[in-house]
Length: 109
Image (cartoon, rainbow, N blue to C red; front, side):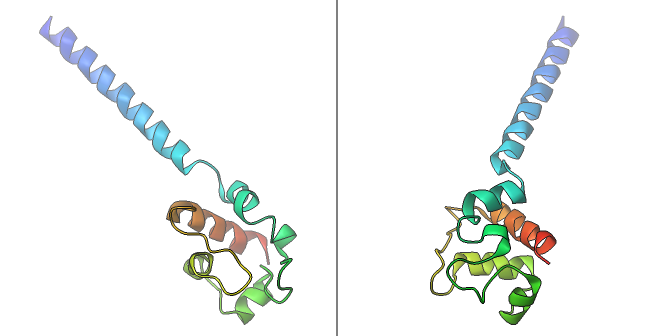
């Protein structure tokens, strides 16, 4: 009987861990592309820039504006220049911001 209770407790614990893991990954939720579409697409359609044509997401323009890494993009999201809405960590958590940045670096050459 004691063995059965231990086995049941172990199974319940493992199931709960699986549920917690599922919640954690779904909290991160969307991939970089989906997050980009949610937060950035309106002002940066196809990597462009409807506010400032000199600050597109193309590699050429990113390099010209010294934005070369994931951290550079996240920093720019947090404290952008004139014309861009800042995205606080509360609005776009760091994990999501980094996913967006990786998507930008991979997609807009």
